Length: 243
Length: 256
Image 1 (spheres, each protein chain N blue to C red):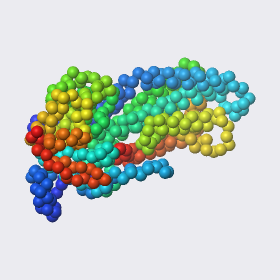
Image 2: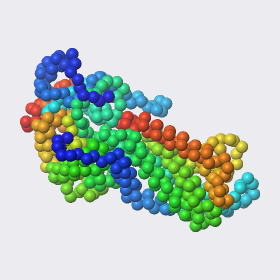
Image 3: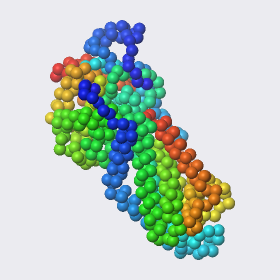
Image 4: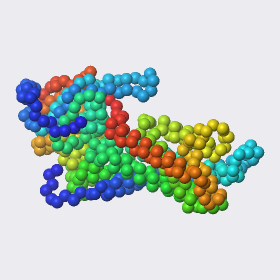
């Protein structure tokens, strides 16, 4: 399902539309088109729920895109499809480079320590032991969790668990970063450190998509997709992280 | 990756070992599992033996061994099968979401399944060892090594059943109830405690292992005609668990 986005005949039209939408002229690092997803029950008389109905979006290098929508509108489902954790019923996802995914609920092994967590995910990302150690030290310092490296994940507070969750998504320096409410449980300092980190990442050309509920964060985004009735609408352009 | 130095990546075997070590550590860090690992075989063997011994022999005219021996064998094979099955189920179901994140990160489903399977097999062999020791402690056992092999095989068989159920069911409660029910029926039919003319009893997975266990304990050998069918069940459940895992590992579940 995932491959590098290739230039097509419709790209010129797309670029014109992007300019109209206020998008930057960076390379498209993630493009999804016509995503459809329905949850069906195995049981008789079970409920069938149509979640996504032709959702399309693109994320460019160096931009931060917000994805908003009501509870249950399908934002997390969309994100799982974008990263390849869930199969879509229809549609395509093309990505350029590596993807980092920070799920809403920390998907970590409860009885492994933070140190072991970095190790097992680092090896999955094809990182060397030295790169894993470097990433661990870098994020432990940036997000202030050096003192809990030998704690089992189940013993961490919600905020610290979320710091590890986010760090695991970032540790391999991905080209595209997809974050599902990544700052849940953060204290104010960590929240600010998070946004500073995203600024550094976009400066380095990383394309970031963030599911967010907070309307007052909209000015931090280059643009917002609103998910309603299974479709995405490019709604607002913010100040591009200048706030 | 921005690194420019020489990158020596861990080999495939090392990554499997990292996974097996991590999952095994995670298992043994739960004190309740440790207690059950030791207590379940001991209690089952002792209580099932005593419970059956208290029943009138005349009620079970077709039993080959004494009621107490039958009860102890029942307890040993039940404890090993149910523990192996539960470990298989929980290794698959409880870790499903994080495993899928690991797959998204780049771990192959096949490698992940291999690490899960090796972890389950290792834990199952520990249970089989404890059950064998408990059986040797309480019963005159003619061939302890064969008893260990048969109990280990029974545990592995149900570990695969657990992995299979974990791939197709969505909740731990559903899976646990289904598994305990299947093992209950299987062991009761295999021991002949519930006399039935239905051939269906012989088609349950533990029928052949139980015959092997009985002869290993009483005669010191393996009953003719049961080794290949028993191995066949292990093979079939192993292949089924692998295929179903590969089909469901990266694409199931999820909520809006």
